[in-house]
Length: 543
Picture 1 (cartoon, one colour):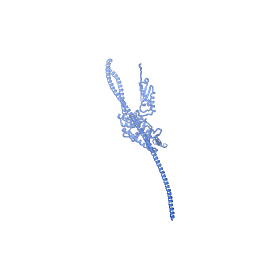
Picture 2 (cartoon, rainbow, N blue to C red):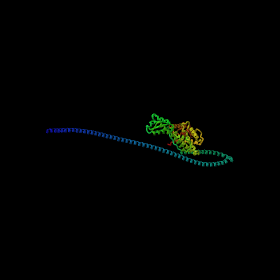
Picture 3 (tube, rainbow, N blue to C red):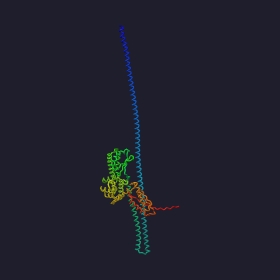
Picture 4 (cartoon, helix red, strand yellow):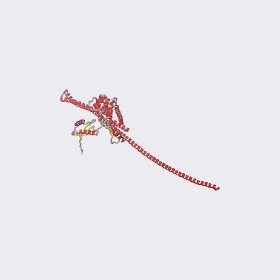
């Protein structure tokens, strides 16, 4: 029985031990698997962590590179901005310096002109003082001559009385016969003396008249002034850059064609940097084209519709300027009433030149000269000013209407009911019709002074040289002429003659012959002075 109990107990113990061993083995296996799984998870986590660290490092490096690139770009941009600012500063500085140089040159030119005018006025003043001194001296001489003449008359009376006494004594003539003989002799002497006195009186009157006329003209010139301009047929417009030329040309040249059709001028685009040229003989059209082009360049939008808009605006501006120029001329001269259409036509002369002289400035100058001379002579000053201002009014529209500017001017002034004196002055200022008033004579004189003064008008170099050559050739044609020189821009010819062939009496005739030939063969503005010089030299050498 005891064995029977022990056996189950032993089996149970053995089962427990075997179970324990088996459980331990199973648990060990499970724990080993868990450890392996944990190790695998740890390795996986470490791998992922390492990958994330590497990714973070790569991202940091990328951000660092991006920051470096941004920093480098910022530095480059900073350098570019600094360089651009320096260039702009240099350009502005150069522009300011150019403007300053231009203003300095203009001031220097004005100073030179003022000095020249001051020198001219001083010279004229010296001449006037010399002439006054000369006249005073001549008056003193005349007084002295008159006293000498009275003394001689007194001596002549004494001689006559003595002659009478001697005649009575020698010829035994009666009183009546002696009186007739003495009176006859005295009559001949008085006729001779009277002729000399009349001649001296005429020369004195002529000298005083010339002096008075010169004084009136000098006063008139000094009281008026007018600018001169160079005659030109082109206007130049500056461009901001070379790319603008392509925009002005447009697709297949459509912008140029539209601009030329609307303005009536030629648009020239050549190799000259940053400029375009506008060419045309009508100054008003050129001015409209220039203003329109400047507006288009400033706006930047250049196409046919925009061109038409800008040309219309420029045309309106120029028309307003024309009317303002006419009104300004009237205000400057004190003319208060004139037909508005005539004022507008007068303003067109601002854009008209003749031999390089601005016609509106020339007309204002002629008006001032004529008015000053009329005031000196006691004539109607306002009427003379009006006639002088309108004498070349026909030149404002002579490009559009057939006929000479004189004919056009006469028709215009008659149409707008100007006074008959003004109409006659316009018609007669070139000698086409007789002058019916002294004012017409003054307008002709003022026109000649304004046109002939030095620097008022210009000529082309070819015409200038040809005229000087022709002047010298005309003088050299005559026998006895040794040399001839055209001086003072062709306004005077100095003729040197051979004294053995040309006498003193002959030089007066020679000067007149040369003058007639010049008037016959040459066309020229103003007057030409012919001076003939006869000089005989005798040389002796002492040894």
